[in-house]
Image 1 (cartoon, rainbow, N blue to C red):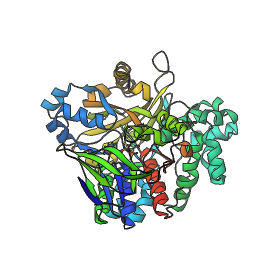
Image 2 (cartoon, protein in one colour; image 1 turned 90 degrees about the vertical axis):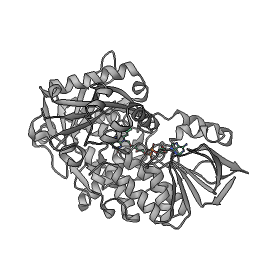
Image 3 (cartoon, protein in one colour; image 1 turned 180 degrees about the vertical axis):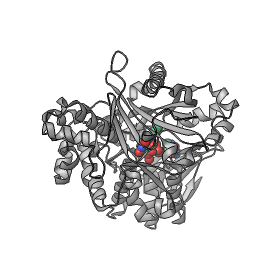
Image 4 (cartoon, rainbow, N blue to C red; image 1 turned 45 degrees about the vertical axis):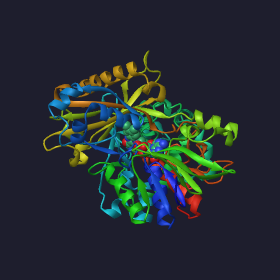
Length: 510
Ligand SMILES: Cc1cc2nc3c(=O)[nH]c(=O)nc-3n(C[C@H](O)[C@H](O)[C@H](O)COP(=O)(O)OP(=O)(O)OC[C@H]3O[C@@H](n4cnc5c(N)ncnc54)[C@H](O)[C@@H]3O)c2cc1C
């Protein structure tokens, strides 16, 4: 059976798919957006605590599984969490979901074009970050202010530490590309910063925050410089951005839903609980998709353009690999992701000092490297409920965190269970009384927090291009394709680049 012709079909309603679908519909194209889940958002969605309790453990594990996550540990057991209704009143993003530049990065660009996000009433709450190094914590460089103790170390060592933040302002496209293959560690070594422990760890923490990679020898410094040069610095300078990060008030779903609503407003069509099984091709051109709806029926839907928001590593499950150059297939399939342990803690009290409540905290040494991990495990966390009070019931607190791990580590069940226990022990050591303050905890682990790790071999322009080679009409979007910046923002940037490639409109990202 065949249905109407669309101008374009977008597979997947994650950040990348929503961005492209909304931009094409905004241009007057007839767009069908197909999403296998029962809501939009993909890896960036929000679940109600009550919803998890009511649907139960199998539903929750299945929901996580659909978004490349699994549940490594809970405190107490899941049946006890359910029985005592411990999640009542909480709103939980799929895992920690801090929004880079507090929504004033590429999200802002999209919002300006289509009227989503803040234009549609979504609120973002910003926070300032700090980094623990050994027993002290230092405020991150923020909006032109440097922690005075960092300043003193910089002056004493005549260090080029600040170049990390400012050199990008003088760089152009050729420099960003050249630095894509240079690691943060190498960049620091060449300037002697690796010998200045506090300064090096500060840059390691900031680099990891932006790329979600632990190992400074793998972090692409060019990817960071491009984000500084093209987004962060100009927006702080003009006052468009005021915070390095933040949370969408009420959960990240608020922003996703606002983009969905604009898409529907522009007469876009959204089919939820509908899975694409195959991308259809005829005579070297895309001709549509074959889909399965939840009631089991299968149909073909025609369109001359298909945009895939499915991580590109999985492309050849949906389309014959023989249609593409061998090198392209091999490279795409081998792109590495980066994973994360993303625990939440429901707390009855706060064991950490009040002055730290509102800060986003980073620690460069939560689990030291040794026989279990080949590099130090770093973690970033917030008392999210201090920034966004809607995410926890009154009188309770929500601590959310992420500790990047490699894709392989994230899939190792025994290692992840052990690491979750180490995180609790670490927090207890850092904040005595922490264990006692825990009412419940969930430890989702994602093996695809960032769909393509921004490492020196595959960052930025080295990712999959948005236009498929050799096949007219096939495009890609999302955090696994050419795009820049922090995960969700990167998926949005990729969506802007992809829509621009399709419509010829200039959205300012290339
Ligand atoms: C635990 C965790 C914590 C994170 N923390 C942060 C953070 O703090 N800050 C940040 O910026 N980012 C964070 N991220 C990363 C961020 O969520 C992702 O980078 C971003 O959401 C990816 O968007 P995307 O559009 O590329 O892909 P996805 O969100 O994966 O979207 C793909 C969509 O396609 C759908 N789909 C797949 N196959 C099919 C099919 N065959 N048919 C129909 N639909 C299909 C999927 O259901 C999904 O909705 C986190 C991710 C995780 C998992």
